[in-house]
Length: 165
Length: 108
Image (cartoon, rainbow over the protein chains, first blue to last red):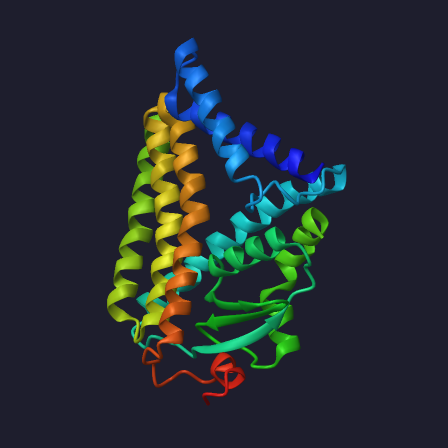
């Protein structure tokens, strides 16, 4: 069942990409797209896709939209923060590697969390080991696991937990 | 009107890309340079794509797909580069206050 769901989701998303990129609805183009998407979907069904472990519930969908909004806000904040550091003559840095913990169980959820952290204020995911993430932080506010987790992980985790568990 | 919005978005995007370039020059070590590179270029690229979408609305869908690919691949490549750099022991800036990763690997 899980495999069938994975194949169908992968097939559908590949086909949508194909149609968007080719930009035409001519029957030969669409047929080639269907064939290619079907072969790839069968071959790679076991691999991760960001839809694969998504909980298809209304609250998960709401969380997904809130997550996108929160992410956009954090992305802008991250850029302004980096811009401030780069343009200030003193170059105010206090870099370090901190360790944080995530409550997320899903592999896709963890992958999205790591990517989100990389794109937001002065933090870069360097290594993941199970529930532990090692983060390079441009201006370390606290080296302790609990405080660093609250500062870096908690915001995204709140939404991703509702989406993936 | 749409032309004006597009031109403004393009300008804002290039400003962020410029700041990213400045970051690459000014930051003291590889990890902080990756930080400057990842963030500024992501927003800079997205704003530029948005600006082009305003100028050429018929391209908007394809530009949105390109933006999506940037959002997914940019942090991933940065993370893998940083991990590889840390594993081979690339020099860290002297200001680096703490390194929990090296501690946990028993290198500190």
